[in-house]
Length: 95
Image (cartoon, rainbow, N blue to C red):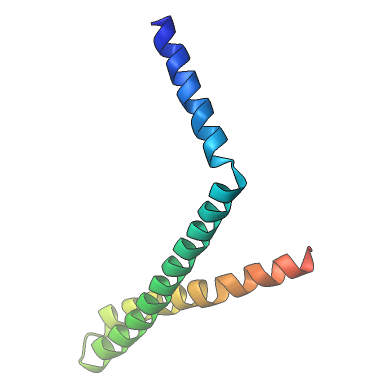
């Protein structure tokens, strides 16, 4: 049991050393930035779809459902379009 514990510590230490290497760390950073941009793009597309579907639902007579979907789309658009801009502004202010 004690030997297994040492093997576990050795494996964790090796993994940390491997992931902290500058070449691997820069790749991980690039992958994280790419993933973040993909999530933001998907959020922006779904916000616009929500606004459009809300407008369509209101125009065909489903006012309550259309209003809920439309407001959800507006809130999503404000978060996905405005969020990155606010974060960039705060980065510049506190730089």
